[in-house]
Length: 219
Length: 219
DNA sequence: GCATGTGAATAGATTCACAGCG
DNA sequence: CGCTGTGAATCTATTCACATGC
Image (tube, rainbow over all chains, first blue to last red; front, side):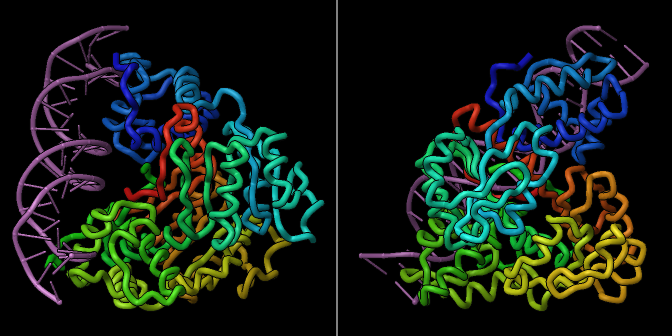
């Protein structure tokens, strides 16, 4: 039994991966799962799965495996996925629209409640179930809508500015898709995803003829 | 001088980050840059930058810093960004279209040369400068177009299947945006990006009140 | 004098291997 | 007997601190 320990970053980054695999397994009506099978589904090693899950507590049964539904519940709890997080999307270009329209979000614990853009032609139109408003109204809309998570899909040149505004407006987590490094104050969580960077990393391994398998790692 | 050593995965994942920062710096007409400044721009620690760059060789000048243009060249070389990699996009939904239309790719060393979808309504239409063809024609088109990198933006249910076809057709690197784990044979590089997973990781740190800064890490 | 380059020290993550328990 | 849970061993990565050399 380990429950009280601090969970390593690398483990945190894998828990959602297990959750995703467990959803698939639950859909196949399996009631229990072994670390071996879960590992195969998530693309990691079985000892890794056991060690990671041991940080949450001793939720498995020796000789049997893990109860799928119970494990899903525990991981959801650890990740803080109890009630849906309210998401605002900043930048309603093609990428912003694609992300806003992604149907998988509600099931993963997120709800898009606002979208912002500077283009007057876009303001007033809808993506998914939300109406795009101007970036100038962002601070007040974000407070009114209690937005906790901002997804930034603006051009690189505006990313830091809108992130600052979002933090100012109470946002505590930022997912940045703009191709530039965004800095945030202590206490605000940020993750950055850049298509070009991912491709360049692949280019290295292709060049050096080494296979690599990876999900966006922790940091 | 270290040149001949194997470059750590974590370093490989940061080199593109440095490249991105160096591009910004070059645009500001700075000829040289210190590890301190580059670190600030990339959001990492200065010792880290120096250690990372030392794996490429001794390209700095003590008391001065690094020559921006020369460093860009060396990183590009290490990453294998000499000539543009030929990219095929599998899945021409909103996300696929957004990625295909991303103007930053050519400058980063990638060229979209093919796009595929199963929807008959989309086949024959264009995104960016390429015409969408059916998934059935994928193997032959990929060989003809010498596609080296596949970007998968299909639903989860088709991701593994199209990835297998792509590998079969000679693709050596895959960037998977579908929300499921895709497995590839040894020798093929894969990276996986999942919006839901990124948000869930942020949720953990928000829940636990810890700031985290991270770019998709290595693995 | 100033910033790189790098061994040494520390911290963190993964894997092993097996005891513990259903 | 099978699979979890976990210390110990290993491997990888980060940070320190300072000698090195422009």
